[in-house]
Length: 255
Image 1 (tube, rainbow, N blue to C red):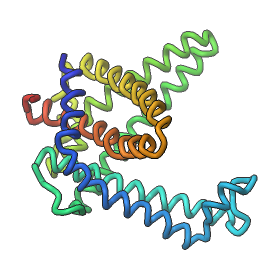
Image 2 (spheres, rainbow, N blue to C red; image 1 turned 180 degrees about the vertical axis):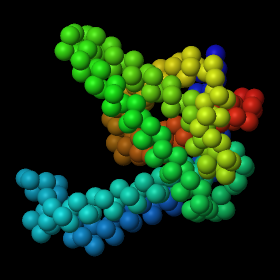
Image 3 (tube, rainbow, N blue to C red; image 1 turned 60 degrees about the vertical axis):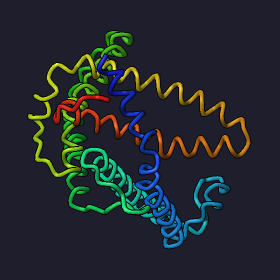
C-alpha cells in the first residue's frame, strides 16, 4: 500500500537523520524564543501580567501594542518555520548537510516557498467560498447532509493539496515545477492521498494519547513531549511532502 509506505518512509526519514534534524531546528528554535523575548521588551508586554490580568492584557500595554506584538512575533516565527522547512527539503532531496547547528539561510528559496504557500492558500479560499454557500443551503434542508458536504469538501481540498504539493519542495530546491505539471504528475494518486490522510489522523490521535500518558511522568515525560511535538512530529509532516516529491516527480523508489 503506497500510502502506508510513504507514511513509514517519512517517519524513518526523520528518525534515521535525527542528528541533522536537531542541527536544522535547534538554533532557529532558539532564535524564535529570543525573538519573542525581544518583542515583549520592545512593546512592553509582560507574559506574567498577561497570564494574571482578568482581561488577559497587562495594564501598561495598549491593545495596539499587543496587536503589533502578536503580528511581529507571528511573522517572525512563520519566517523561522519556513527556514527550517526549506533546509529540511534541501537536506533530504539535495543532500545539503547543515554545517554545524546553523542551517543555511536561503532567502530566495524561502521567498519562493512562501509564494507557493500563499498561492495554494488563495486557491483554497477561491474553492471554499462557493462551497460554503452551497453547504449553507444544504444545511438548511438537512443538518446531516450539511455535515456530509463539509466532510466531502475537506477530503476534496486535502486531495487537491497533496496533488499539487510537489511545487513546495520544488521551490525549496530551485526546480521550476508548475502547478499543472504537479497535478499531472500525481494523476491516479487520489486513493493513496485519502488513505494517507486517514493514517495521519490516526497518527495524531495515537500521539495525543501517548503524550497524555507521558505527561504523567514528572519532568522527563514533559521534556519528551516537548521534544517530540516541536521537532519530530512537524518534520514528519514536512517529510511527507518531501517524499511525495521524490516519489511522483523524481520517481524515487521508497527504501
